Structure formats: C-alpha cells, structure tokens
Image (cartoon, rainbow, N blue to C red; front, side):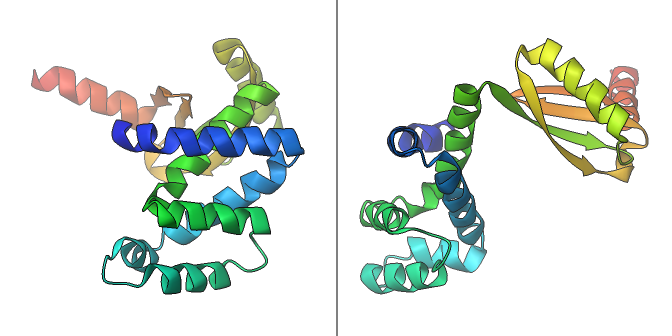
Length: 178
C-alpha cells in the first residue's frame, strides 16, 4: 500500500495544485471519483494492465466510456497515466486528492458505520465530537451495518474508533482466549 502511495503522490499533488490554481476543485474531485469507480471494475483494471492490449486502443475506448464525465484536461491526465503505465493508480490518486482538499478546506472526511440510521440530532452530536477529536470540522459519510448490533465505528485520517457492541464482544473474546 505504501508503494502505491509513493507512486501516486506526485500525480495527486500535481492535479491538486492545478485544480486549486484553476479554481476547479469540485470538477476534479468529481472526475477523479468517476475514474476511480470505472477503474474499480475488474475487467477494466485487467485490460488496463494487460501488456498484450494495445495501449492506444485501450485509452481511446476508456475515454469513450468516460465521455461526459471527464473534461479535456481529465482526458490528458488519463493519457498521461496510461502512457506511464500508472492508470491503475487512479483510485489512490483520487483518495489523496480528497485528503489534500479536505486539509485545504479545513475539514476531515469521516466514515461512520452505525448499527441503525442516525437521526439528525445524533449526526449533529457526532459532528461536534469529531470536531473535538480531530480539531477540524467533520464531513460524515454514514453507512448502516446491522451486524454491529449497536454503537458506531469512526474512521478518519488513518484513525479508527470502534465503539460498537460487535467490536467490544470481539475484544472480550480475544482477552478470554489469551
């Protein structure tokens, strides 16, 4: 994973600086997220890394697939990545771009996994807690996972807080087995 980060960092930094200078942060965030989703398809990922596939033909088909979601600057970025054999890094680049943007804009993205859907007041309280914990405003991305039984798991900037019943039961089981 750290090798991917090392390879992706120069691309992410360059795209971030370019987007910031041009005032197109949201446009680039949307494009990178779209490209990340496209590259997440196993067939496309395999075709992108297949040395037998014609690179030019693949890029042309890939860009055709992305029509309407990628600007001309985005197309040039895709060509650059493909020519350098780095198209597979687009997901890591998108994630790093999002981190840079969050840092620049003074917020932190927080993945919140709950056992039940949160009410508005609970989200407000959780946001206040995140702001204390991270010293930045939180942007919550809430998903529901009923297997947690109750409680919440928070993930932000490489930190994880597991306050779920499932997590507590797993920790208890581990202590009892030692």
